[in-house]
Figure 1 (cartoon, rainbow, N blue to C red):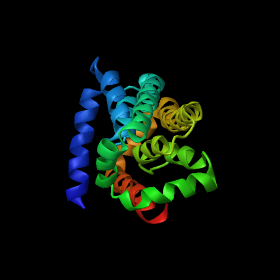
Figure 2 (cartoon, rainbow, N blue to C red):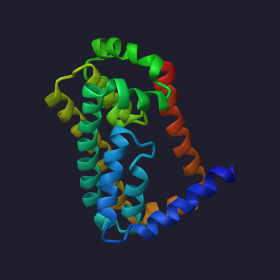
Figure 3 (tube, one colour):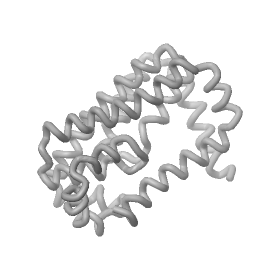
Amino acid sequence: MKFITQPLLKAKIWMESFADKPSAMYALFWLSFAESSFFLIPPDVLLIAIAVSNPKKALKAAWWCTLGSVLGAIAGYYIGYAFMDTVGQGIIEFYGAEDKMADFEAIFAQWGYWFLAIAAFTPIPFKVATIASGMMEMNLLAFTLISSLGRAGRFFLVASLLYFKGPSIKIFIEKYFDKLSLLFVALLILGFVLIRFVF
């Protein structure tokens, strides 16, 4: 499994060296923004790197992460609302969810806003949910509120653990990095599987 863990280890080392730079929070903001609307890599990677490197910055990093993610979610919403036939369709096809978009309307009818909340907090690719929400013209105020609560809950949970248990968690991550890397990849894959075969 070194072909998986080695690149992630290199990315971890690079991010930890980058985490102390003045531009780290801005990078976290833009990564969070992009991930909510079109990008693949979740911002948790850089959030954890910053928080592990300097636990005192963990909650500040969670704030930047949440702000970028919510604004990115609104951008994703407008992609679905106004540009579904062009930009939105391309993103959905990239994630293999094109044959599932017709099912999202039924999911929203059955689950209401719960689907968006689940996507905001779990490994389900959030950008698919934000684009689908715009396509289906979900109430924008409700969309923003649910996205804010879901993303803040996710990022502040991670940041709080690292803030209060920083040194011990850093030791744990370094000791079990290979296993945690595989778990991270498995969660990413699970998110795409849920989108493609469950919803």
